[in-house]
Length: 97
Ligand SMILES: [Zn+2]
Image (cartoon, rainbow, N blue to C red):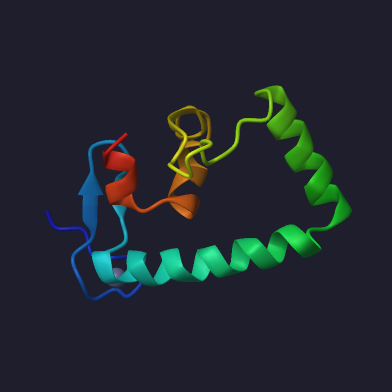
């Protein structure tokens, strides 16, 4: 059975042993670029509730940051925020961890 990409409904979806069904490569590349931009904007304008929720989430795990001091994906962050990790990193970056 071939999964079809849920984003463009055209290309076959990719399946990752770690993350399950994923959008096709071209959609992921598009998403990755878009998400990078959106996140930067959202951090500046996140609503108070969102920020409080985020703070609570972050504090629970002792302020784990997505990137380590060298600017590389933080494997600790990826472990804790598996679903969020794809918003920050490409699949190839994650597979290297
Ligand atoms: Zn697609």
